[in-house]
Amino acid sequence: MIIECFDGGDVRLTESCDFRRFKLVLHAKTSPGTLEWKGITFLGDRDALVSIDLVPTLAGRPDDASWDRHYAEMVAKAREHGWIDAGRAAIRAHIERTP
Image 1: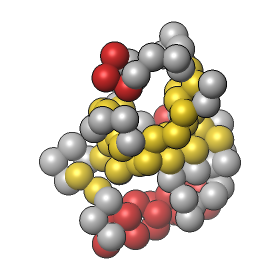
Image 2: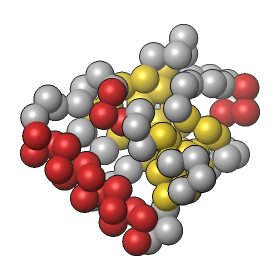
Image 3: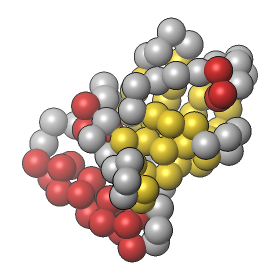
């Protein structure tokens, strides 16, 4: 699952049925410290926290009950591995940049 962030604040979900990986891709030329997208907190140049509640609201999300179930299972597995920030209700995501 990929959260894609674009200049101007546009955020969308791609590869939405790939529940085995989770990353944030920046399509922006500025550094993460100067960018802001609602529900995304940058922890530096390499990692970010993505609100658990944000992901199901993004464009690109399939509209079916099985997706909801698989997403909940992914969040549960992320929690088991320590990738959830409980205080912020967010999932840790690796950041990749595209030119």
